[in-house]
Length: 118
Image 1 (tube, rainbow, N blue to C red):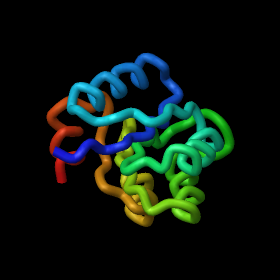
Image 2: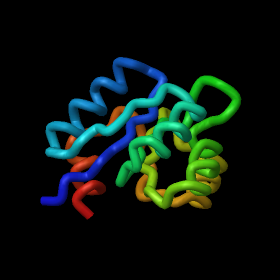
Image 3: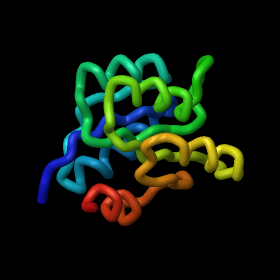
């Protein structure tokens, strides 16, 4: 198995810790944690992740999809979006980025395992 470097972008600390635990239990490495879009953009430059696990709804001016539009200028890391709701407009916006998956919260071990093992 190839160990993937994963950047977590989540503003809810409980969900962030849960996602971190899942990523680590799958044998992958969490290389950074960001709580908003601006932190995520900076972290991608510093961490060079293989995947980004990104909450769609983030605090601040930019949401997760906006963050990925900016990240695409500096990285080709695919994103696994995580959201509490999956309205059609949001899904369509997400599809215009380097999206590996669009998951509804809470994510499970099995869901993430399938995506990271591709």
